[in-house]
Amino acid sequence: MDSLDPLRDNRQAASEQLHRTLVELATELDETPELNPVVRAELAEIAEKIRASLNREVSEPAETAQPAKTPESLDRFAVEFSASHPRLARMIEEVTKALAGIGI
Image (cartoon, rainbow, N blue to C red):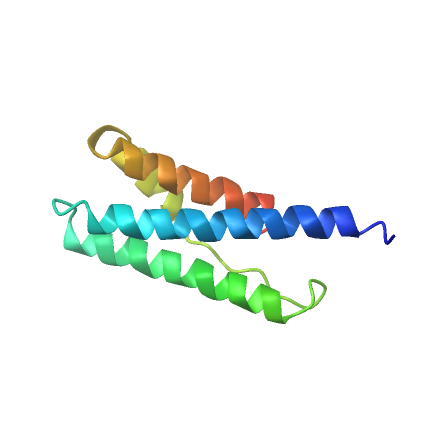
């Protein structure tokens, strides 16, 4: 067995978890009507960029795939929402951790 298999498996599991978290984030955004429309659009755009990066990663070998440039504002959103939208803030933190876990 190739010694890279456990790393690949861990990365795949982290990617799958990130996909699930992005779906949860989209649902939470839909269920938070009081959210500022500009902020909602920014978060939706960030989520789409992350999805596109994950899809690219699946189609390109790890050695050639270019990591996505995730906006630093993702951390800002988590802090900003910590009081007003704690569930949304937790989900954003989960996305940030998952991205770090897969090297993005």
